[in-house]
Structure formats: C-alpha cells, structure tokens
Length: 65
Image (cartoon, rainbow, N blue to C red):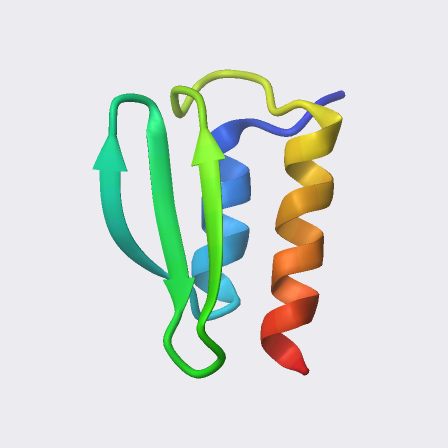
C-alpha cells in the first residue's frame, strides 16, 4: 500500500525539516542544520508516488551526513 503525502511530510518533520513555503500543491521543506531542501507535491490525502517516497528518503539521509 502506498504512503500518503501527509505521511511523507510527517517523516520529514520528524527528521528535523521545517516548512518553508507553499505554492499551489507544492510544499517546500528545509533542514536548518544542513541546508537540504525537499519539495513535496500533491494534496495531503493523495497517495505518494514511488519517486516521492525515494526523494524523501534521500533527503533525510543527506540531512544526517
């Protein structure tokens, strides 16, 4: 079962990312300690695509290095 967009956002926030801006259905989050930025598109209740899940995992790993 696919993750929801809200779950991806929750994962980013748990990893220390902070909401920066919103334009339409795109949300921009950044990690203040490492200057890593992640952009998530879609409405909160939408199913996340595989590329979005992969993007979030990569950005969380980047922020921890």
